[in-house]
Image (cartoon, rainbow, N blue to C red):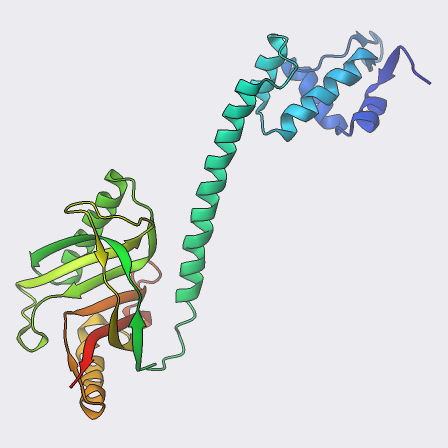
Length: 272
């Protein structure tokens, strides 16, 4: 049976709002009990405040903050107007998109962590067409220089609102037999979520056939894995037909221990 006033416990049960939350609403002036017992300080809510409590619940379900709810109620905007709903819908879509991007990035990181079995995984591999953001420079090829290149690549992506996919890569344009670490022609790149080119920033990377192998440990020892790859290519009547590429699966982002680094080495090939 309807009553004129309800205790805080009754309102909590009827409206499915915790008592502590109702007390907080009282403190901030969002839902103030219409009546309060002077001696006991018990809170009593009027019948019409049940509707107000349910309206607050609806705003919360729609993703409104306490500040936004107070603004809506203060302006007697108890109906969810098309304008405010559209605004909130746009905010939620943006949040969902950001969470999807984060999930995708975490998925790539988890996939990379699987490559810790120290198997060579030497194989012939088809690389699909992708779009990449890139920075190509000629100069030192030590780790500090690479970190600077990677920082420039990240800055390039941010300035152009590009969303990276996957891991950073490095392509070596010098002949591997004449490689000079003091003056190396290297391009660092990363796949991005885009399907068109941007001059000097993004280009389409055609698909290609390559010999792929995993290198474990310091970058300075990669020549050992490259040697095994070249020997395998010779046995299988394959020759190099483009610059070698390194795809960094586990790098300094994951660990400071270079012995834990895992790098996929790719050599574009064709049959003799």
